[in-house]
Length: 186
Image (cartoon, helix red, strand yellow):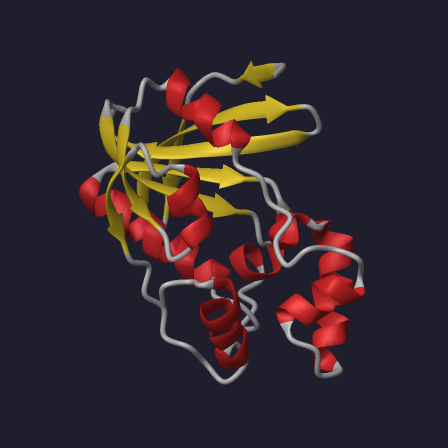
């Protein structure tokens, strides 16, 4: 892996004061957001980019709310969020918008991805291992509902911290599909 690593900078935000550092992997620029000094054991959220949810407040998903929950949690308990640039479960923003259009026509999130020629989830987590080694992190309390993240870090997890979000009328079906067909722990 050819990874470039930025300097560490301050990030004051409405959720608290954090430090940030970027890891450039080819054309993807990932971000670590942390409170306190990264240490051997820490609270960790692995969050995949969701422009529509994270920045625009989309009610079709729970991504923005999960990120906000995690920022508040890290502010209170210290730890890190690894923000991965893999929009739309790894299919990119263009394809995500096309998937949204298919969902508007009645397909669920998985069916829409399949219709576009993708798996239900195209994300990968290899960079996470690199980042954890870089910071010398050996054990984590993982903030997640995603069983794939639990599986990918199973030898490092001390505990799972549930990321509980109340459904709304726009994302209830989406959350039901994540739970029933993707095994998410909601």
